[in-house]
Length: 159
Image (cartoon, rainbow, N blue to C red):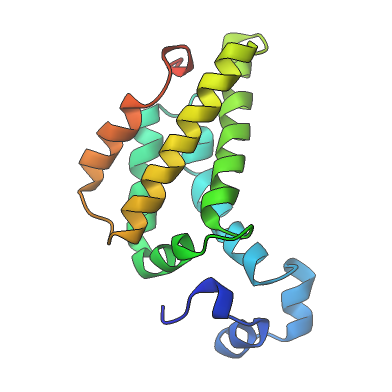
């Protein structure tokens, strides 16, 4: 809660969690891979299921609620802007999951135009999520969910 991800060391995590460095490195390459694992854990139940098992609204609402449960953690993680940023990682993973889910749902490969539109909409959603986290997770989750839903291209609204 008190450090930015760039300032956290593996030794900090091991000391606070009571595990050895060896155990940490069995599961994670570095602190950033642990942060990415936590993000994937949240999104595997929410964002990555959109257009597969849940609607956009359900997925976004569950993601935002999950972020609020660990608000201090996610606020710090979204501040980091380098190649390890949760913004960059989340954008890439979200784009891949949306492409896979949509293509499976509609039974065909997306066109270049559809990929272009989806790429830009996912990037915009990532920027909105980052801004929301950085600014104290206001406005309400209901407002954010409604906003997120408006930035999805029509062809991607398959569920």
